Image (cartoon, rainbow, N blue to C red):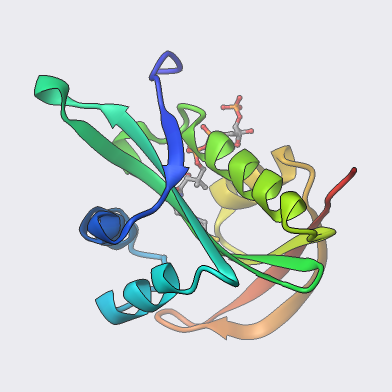
Length: 158
Ligand SMILES: CC(C)(COP(=O)(O)OP(=O)(O)OC[C@H]1O[C@@H](n2cnc3c(N)ncnc32)[C@H](O)[C@@H]1OP(=O)(O)O)[C@@H](O)C(=O)NCCC(=O)NCCS
């Protein structure tokens, strides 16, 4: 599994259907409308989005993961990151997060923040591996089901 070749590139509007497929395949993720994705991908000044692409059947490329983040002043906030479940634990999330942190730094962010469900141990471990630390929590931050969030942060070094 680890040998899967992926390319990280900026997301385009034509990627939205695949992004939604991947997002919907994870029950615990907040599900956004198509309009929200169009708005986010249209907002080049604050929002950035990357997809991870592999070579699929017959030379066609296939999107297997995405990250969407928002940069305002010196803070970059990860809105969502997900990898298709069939390709989880292949290093794709790591490549997506690396690209998001690099782009955030390039656009003058000094730290990256995010919220994560307290029960989402795979994601928490993933962020810890990236040297994020827990800096607080938010009561009842999530719905369906209602759950608290951890706030996690990563300082961007020069
Ligand atoms: C969280 C997520 C994006 C990680 O992506 P991924 O491609 O599977 O992660 P990677 O293969 O790059 O893993 C990097 C490291 O993170 C940690 N990690 C990732 N998945 C893990 C899991 N299921 N359990 C424990 N640690 C895990 C490991 O330390 C791993 O390194 P290792 O494989 O060398 O041990 C992916 O699991 C996912 O899409 N989850 C569902 C969506 C979600 O919950 N997103 C977060 C919303 S806040």
